[in-house]
Every structure is written in C-alpha cells, then in structure tokens.
Amino acid sequence: MWVWLGCRVLVVGEPRSAAPPGLRRPPASGFRARQTGRVAGIGQRVRLGVIGAAAATVLAQAVSALLCLMYAFGKYPELHLSGQDLHAEVCVYAQHLGQGLPMGLQFSVLAIGIIVMQRALVGFDIGQDGIMAAGNPAQNGFGAANKLNNFLMCPMNALSTAIVSFNAQNLGAGRQDRIRRGTVKSLLIGLALYLILGGIGMLLTINGAYQYLFMSADKITAATIRCGNLYLYVDLSMYFALMILLVFRSGVQGVGHAEFTLVAGCAELIARVLICAFLPRLVNGGAIDASASVGAYIALCFADQGAWILAVVSLLYPAARYLLGGERKKPSGND
Image (cartoon, rainbow, N blue to C red; front, top):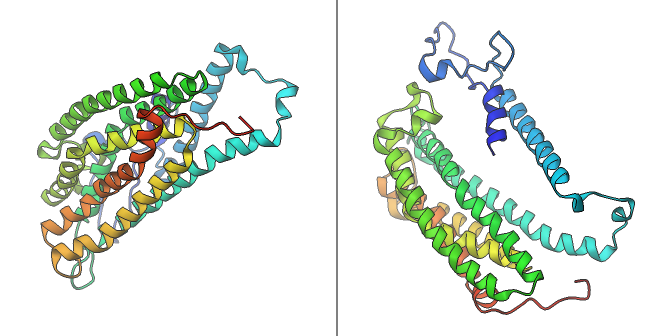
C-alpha cells in the first residue's frame, strides 16, 4: 500500500479548473502549492491534472505488483512455475471461476451501489431554480469524508484479507476448531479496531481538520464541514456493523462458499438503492434540493449502515453453520 501511495505522490498534481475569462486565478499557497504536479527528478512543474491521476494509479499498481511478484517468487521456491503447471485440468479452472466470479460480481454490485448514493447526493446541491449551489457543499463535504473513511478502512480490509487465507488453510488441514476460534478472535479484533479507528475519525472531525488533507482551503466552508461531519458521525458510529460484515463475508468465502458473498453484495445494493431513493424524500416530506432538511441528508448517510446491516443478516446462516457451527463444506468430485 505504501508503494502505491508513494508513486501517486510523486506523479499526481491537483486538478486545476480553468479560471473564467478576465478573472485571474489567485496564487496557490501552503500545502496546495506543493501539489502542483512536480514529477520526481524533473526540475520544472508539470500540471498533469486528471491524466496525472490516471497515470499515477496505473504506475503505482504496476510497481506494487512487480515488487510483490519479486518478493513472492524469491522467498517461496514452491511458487516457481514449470511447464507441467501450465497444463491444468478443466475442473481446476471451474473451481477457480466458481470462487472468483461471485467475488468479482460482488465488487461490481458494490460499485453500482456507491454510484447510486453519489447520484442521490447531487440533489442536495441543486437549488429549487435548478442551479447548482455555490461550492457544492454536500458533494465536496461528502467526498472529503469518504476519502478519510477509505483510509480508516485499510486496517479492517487487511484483517478481512487475512481471514480468507486463515480459514482456507485450516479448512484444508481439517481444523474446523481453529476456524471457529479464529472467527471469534477476529470479531474481538474488529471491536478493538472499531473503537480505535472510530476515535481517530471523530478527532479529525474537529473543525473539519480532515478536509484540509483532501481539499484546498478555498473549497472548505462551514457547509462542507457540516456535510462531511454528519456523514462521518453516522458512518463511524456503525463501524461495528461493518466489522461483523467483513469477518463473516471473508470467513464464509475462505471456507469455500463464495455464493453467499454474492448474496450479501446484492443485499447491500438493494439496501442502498431503496434508502437513497426513498428515505431522504420521506424524511424531507417531498423532493430533495439544496433547501432540504438536515434530517433528509442524515437519512441519506444511513445508506451505508442499512447496506451493512442487511448484508450481515444475509450472512448469519452461513456464518453460524460453517464458521461457528463447525460444519465443513461437502467436498465435490473436483476437490
């Protein structure tokens, strides 16, 4: 992850919109002045903007992938490939597709849900006359808060990845008792992460401190801080539901039941769509625009929590049966 972030810092410059005719752009200052896209090793400034962001993402991922491959193949000789390894049976491909496709579809479903939520958010910045509100406080505030949210979720995502490998290894070794103990301990670790990360996030909401990390000072207003903080208050308070979801979803995937993770992803999508489409209007008592009540915006912020809770409910049965109950997946003829 640090390699990925480092490459992006070296390449990306902050996108700069064109100034209106006749209006001179004020000089950049402070942190923003240092974000003008200076590429490492090049003395002149290069304003790369969106192209720089795209190039930095691809470069960072390529460097990270290369370093991971070098480390893995250098440290673990059993990963070295031979000609015989390239001739796998059809059943092997079927097994991998059976595990991989549900996960891929799940991430697609999650991305669609996020797009739906962002589309609903735009309504809070459009006035009754159809003109966008100055500064786009709802979108900018939510955007900065969501970036902080993504950083805070990194330790939880790391735990989630570890659970998949842990359960898969113990399933192969026939140690169902370790899967059960590992699930319980993962939930306890998740509770500790919820308290620590939630506390850090709450501290960063003071005076909108986190927004200065992700936006230039001229875009930060009382309205953007209010919108961003409201989203974080709701999200951070329900991190424990997200932790349960990550433990159950990764655990069930690790024991070979990826189909349930797809069901959980669909449950998240349904919850997000329904909440974004109906709950803010219901709370506001009508259509959403820039004059909508604070309660309507808070209702929209509950889209994440509603999605997490419904996904957890959809995973209760497989988690109780295969993670905590000790039942193993029945082996197929290909296993």
